Image (cartoon, rainbow, N blue to C red; front, side, top):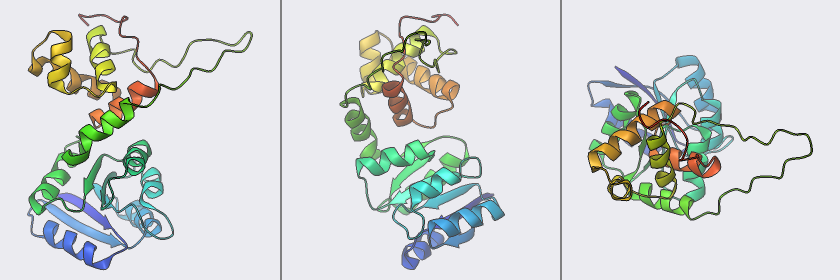
Length: 228
């Protein structure tokens, strides 16, 4: 049984989500919250598997609440707004999913199941646009090293193969699996496998999170072991 907490400041929205999920045999709504503070308190006490979280709420917004729930429950942002700053803010805060409120009932139920299995989910209507928008941003500048200070940057990719690093570079540029396959001369299914493996190795839930990471910490595609 997947235990879900629904957090939204609009009672009608909460009622609609509860109605959709309540008729599903493998999902149980264990509580409702009307703001971020209540969501954090209830989640800490009831330990649900998933929190469906609105972004704009009184006292504590959904992104701040998501940040507080790391390690407590998986959070799926369910919002009317698909603004870039909300999507990136939610992912940076640790959200496992991002859905729009116009998502139909079957898709919402499936999203809960997907996240409960340990996978990430971003609304299809915003996934590619978010990656492309992030890829278009200038890469962060590396600050000059002071005299005597170490010059090496943190290396989060030590367990990736060279091929996986190459795939990650292309994810950071906003390429789809098909485009990555063409760029690297491989089958699309092989590219998809590389993406799945690097996400698992990096502990990420989605390719959007991978794109953000690749932009903030550009991988060295030339290092590593192709056969590892």
